[in-house]
Length: 274
View 1 (cartoon, one colour):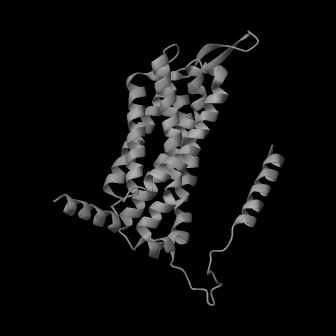
View 2 (cartoon, rainbow, N blue to C red):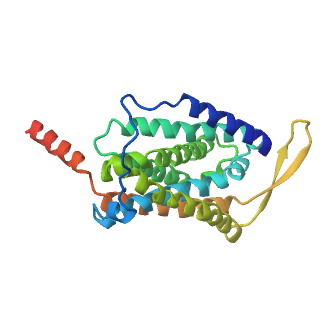
View 3 (tube, rainbow, N blue to C red):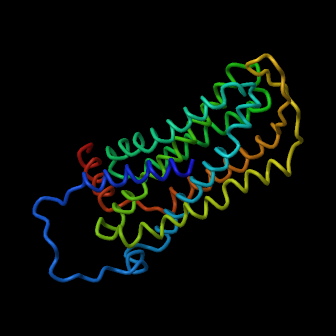
C-alpha cells in the first residue's frame, strides 16, 4: 500500500511541478527582503482576533475527526453494515465537495467569516436533531432517522473540508496576502492538535459511557456475524461535539471581527438602502 502511495504521490507532485509556470513579468528579486515575523503579523490586529480564528479552526477539525472516527460503527448501528464502505466513500466525496463548495460560496461573500458561521449553524442543527430523536439508537429500521443520521455525517464531513480550505483566504482577508507565508503555517498547528484530540476524545467517550451491544449482521453468503456496538456512547460523542460547535460559533461571532472591507461593504449597502 505504501509503495503504491509513494509512486502515486511522486507522479502527481512531479507532474504538478512541471505544469506550474512562473507568472508573466516575474523576475528574480535582486535583494531578498526580510519578511515580517509571525508575532508582528498577528499584532497588526487585536490578538483576540487571531486566537478566535485558531480556536474555531481547531474546534471544527476536532469535531469532524471525532465523528468521522466513529462513522463506520454508527453506520453499523443503523443496520447498514453491508454498505458501510459505500457510505464512507460518499462521506469522502462530501469532504472534498465541502472544500470546493464552501470555498466557492465564501468567494461570493464580503465577510469570509460568514462561511464558518454557516458551517457551525448547520452542524449544530443536524447534531441537535439527531440527539433529540436519538437517531443513532433508534435509527435501525427507521428510514427517516437513518436519513437524518447519514445527513449529519455528510454535513460534518463537508464542514470539515470547507473549514480547512477557507483558512488561507480568511487569514488573507484579515492580515493581507503578503503575510500568508508567515501566519498560515502556525495556524495549521490547530489542525495538528485536533488530530491529537478529536479521535481520542471520541474513543474515550465511547469507552466510558454506555454499554456495548451485540447486533447481528447478515453477510453476502447468508451467514451471520455478531458486531459489537455502543449506540449510547456514540450519542454521547454528539453531546460533546454539539457543545464544541456552540463554543466555536460564539468565538466566531465575538472574537473574529469583520474585516474593514466587510464593514465598508455593509455601510455602502445601508447607504444604498436609505
